[in-house]
Length: 136
Image (tube, rainbow, N blue to C red):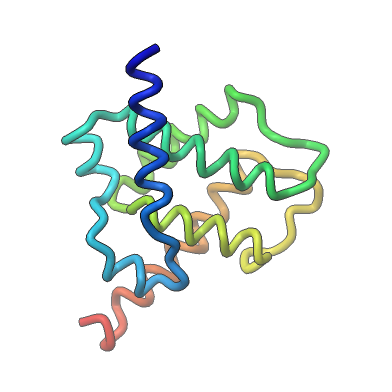
């Protein structure tokens, strides 16, 4: 119980620290990538952060078909596997963009496939900006 409370406190602190407006803000932040957080603090820390971010996104969308706890956990596993280099700010910005319908409409459904689609689109934008001459 003490460990869970500590994880919530740490995750809450990380989540409150910044609110990126664009991908360039993410690149300029001093925040560590999730691979580094896992190495230094352990995977449960990253899991807690991602669960909170997904829960916030789910709370925003008023959809009938939402995700179960098992689906959230499976989605978190996929995110950690596919995007270990991303920072919490990346996920904050991606989910905020999804809320602004940048990646299309939800059509009354949010699940792991939809979230992974958001991240795929966000990652394309992230890579394009990273490769642009302005960022070099």
